[in-house]
Image 1 (tube, helix red, strand yellow):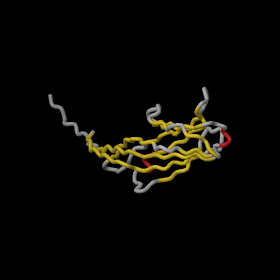
Image 2 (cartoon, one colour):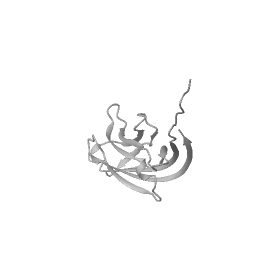
Image 3 (cartoon, helix red, strand yellow):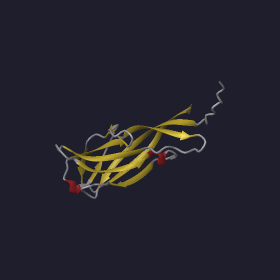
Image 4 (cartoon, rainbow, N blue to C red):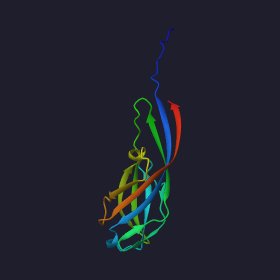
Amino acid sequence: MFKSARWRSEKKKKKIKIVFKLQFHATQVSELKAEGLTISLVPGDVGKPTGKTEKATVLDGDCRWESPVYETVKFVEDVKTGKLNQRIYHLILSTTGSTKSGVVGETSIDFADYIDATNTCNVSLHLHNSISKAMLHVSSLFLFLALMLVMT
């Protein structure tokens, strides 16, 4: 019996791994009356936090995190189109010291928008579902790039 040859369309994909250095600063948090705040990084496709800041104290309505968070983000680029997949992360701002319902608000950021940045990017984000008018300011710097060409 004769079977015809099946042609597979070869799709080449490039896997890219980038380490981002994230520095956080929250403003307009005086109305929260919280001792301290933390930020959790939750990838949209995972649903569980992959990174978290240390506790930072609120001083005069501002909250600065001294230590940066390093987050490794994996991208897939279609070689033909050059299009990158979205990598949306949810940033969840929470109060510390509270036993229940400590979430102040959350916002989202797509790291694919910052993959071509050559310098530090500063982004100001409004918090959604927030009990205050707090703003989250993120400084991101792309540190390390690893490429892998894969045929699938």
